[in-house]
Amino acid sequence: MAQSDKKSKGKGDLSPEEIINQFQVLRGEQRIIANKLSEARTEIFEYKLVIDTLKDVEGDRKCYHAIGGILCEKTVKDVLPKLVDTSSKLEGLCQTLEEQLTKKGIEINEFKQKHQLVVKGQDELNAVLEEAERAKNASSSAEKKPVTSS
Image (tube, rainbow, N blue to C red; front, side):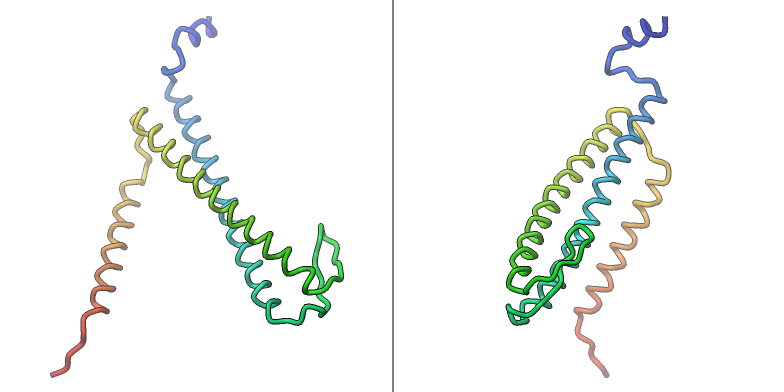
């Protein structure tokens, strides 16, 4: 009978437990994307640091490039183009991950609205973020005002 109950409910009718589980799955997917994006940004920073260091070095100078955990001896002129290419590919990956993260956020918000979910502590978090933004705006406008002395 349990199967017939599920079939009669239809796709749109989820139990509260199923709604919560599905919401948690969506949030988990969002966290995974955010973590991958963070890792990719860190790698880009590291690549740019190495590129900036090597661009002023002679092309015939020896350098070492780690490939799959093995250190290979190469020259700067061989390694630098590969580093630049990999860095640009990582930037493309970051753009894709940012788009996925935005889409997932929209999907989560739509799911919350559809099922009338309220995340515990979200109101307090929003209030704290708004207060921080107001404080930031107030301090930046205070810095712009000229200081006059009497």
